[in-house]
Picture (spheres, rainbow, N blue to C red):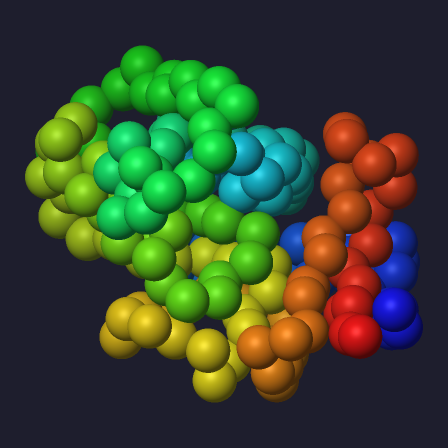
Length: 178
């Protein structure tokens, strides 16, 4: 298996700061905006974005939540489920601008599941999608992100691996190919 480093720690941090600056440009004081990270790994990016936004803006009340999509997936009966993650959203999303966050956008099916799950909680006025890695040319659904850390052109046999210091002990993005 071949590994190619796409983002090292320095570029990882720069990318997250850039995404935050784009959010600040579009959401100003975040009074009508909320951040929702998709379980399991989109939550890591959502919390990093949230932490950076707090530091960059000084705003202390930016709402952040975590959304599990396990039972909304169209393939959940065919997958082995260890244990579902928890949804933790303690704020209303009705009529809010939701920034939905995941680490890697591949086929679009997880994002579709996230939107279905979110609509069971409330109807936002707008949904924007942020991803750290956009794997182009692999969509099953017509879903495109509003905010992208990096774009990667991959083939089906390649895999994008995001390492988070919370789970793997370091931050990096790798392209794995056989």
